[in-house]
Image (cartoon, rainbow, N blue to C red; front, side):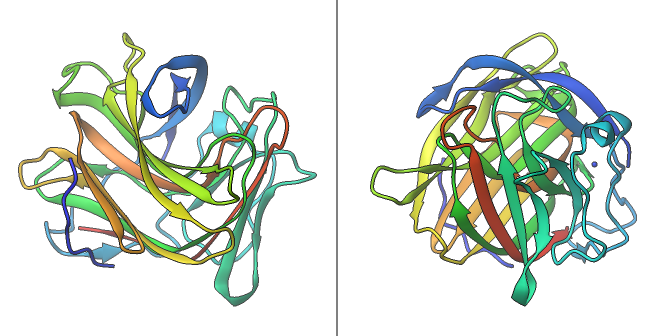
Length: 289
């Protein structure tokens, strides 16, 4: 559902097998098995509910052993953007770099290569928050899409981890993202943003499905403010809320898990044809309530 709302604004890792799904409009179906990282860091439960605490440079999770072995490039010593870098791409074209005026650049090169099972990615991510009443993270900043491949590239996403506490597949273990914001080329040299929302959870027993909806049309090389909130509402039910410019969408998720965390950057390209993508971010901040 959509609401018009006023907005402001892993430490170890465990690997599970998940399914990468196709990116057609409508309901996504399983087309390829892929591995993803589910972050297992602890929530800072010392922070009272509704008190906002913003992460600092010392408060980010570490990559797990398998993810670290898949790293194909390194972070810079003092990145302009906050969060732990997960970098898996062709070193000849791809990685993260600081740009002028506080921008951070995320370039990826795709193809048939997989990094310990995953597609190419250069993303940053943060610690989880655990399920509770009115607990959430708020990811804010400015984004600019410079280049896209012939496939879809995810620029913001959240992963829901642990057991499913209520809703669809309650009692099973979740093993996939719950929300993804994808960017893709259009025929008239524009960018179409889509929301991919998991409706039937991906678990150890089920393949799952996602609902795909058009979100917004952008121009290349234009800067846009964004706010992405995810967590648990006043009933403890999982939700996501995305706003870019004056376009926003609220999602009440069909399933609520033990924890959730956010990622941003560039994830995934086409396996052939044009296989490069480039997204820049500036002024990124993550706050927890």
